[in-house]
Length: 314
Image (cartoon, rainbow, N blue to C red; front, side, top):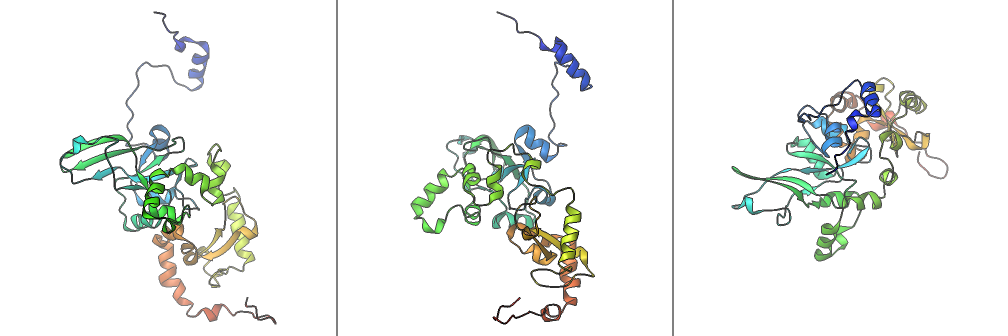
């Protein structure tokens, strides 16, 4: 039998090890996932556990999709409790789960964040899987079984809120066929949000997709100043409370023309859509809602509409 060459003795590799300030070793240390960041867990094993509420918020993008290292990820419950007698009889094909995976921060996920019911949830990388298979731990009291290739169905709230399909228009039978055959890649291909469409077929690197420019603080400050520090929605004047005035992107974070920006008080910003509801949990939001906003008793005091000769209200 022909012996394979030992590339560790190659000058190319020796030079590379030297540049990396390391050396070749035949021993591979066991990896501990406990101290690795979510970004590194996704990169190394394709999944990452969610430990804190901040883990939800950190990776929630402006279009409601969770992204890690620039790539969209799914959200699902890995440890699934079942009241079943023969837990060890289940396999990847026979196990039919009632649990669902999430494409985005839908109403269900928002409630998870709000109620802080975050245990057992994990992020999963899926872009390179035609039909993603999920690692599931079935538990029933002291019984436990691990399955590595379980197929889960998508959350119906995600489908509705992403406007992928009008489920109400389908018959019960057609609805089940749609849900059974749907794959996350369909979401990337068909979702009408241009942000999601732009990542299909790209390198998925954040810097090539959507991020704040280096001079965002200057852009934001200048825009708020151009609007006289007023919320463009409720018209409240925050000249004396500028830190409670945000600049919202109507589209992507790299589209910073005036027509793509809007100055909003933190309350209006938090109510733009469900993907912004998490702001309601912030300390600044609560101060603004309970202390600052009540100082402006009536909208009429801060906003007087202008009516032109044609009856248009501005």
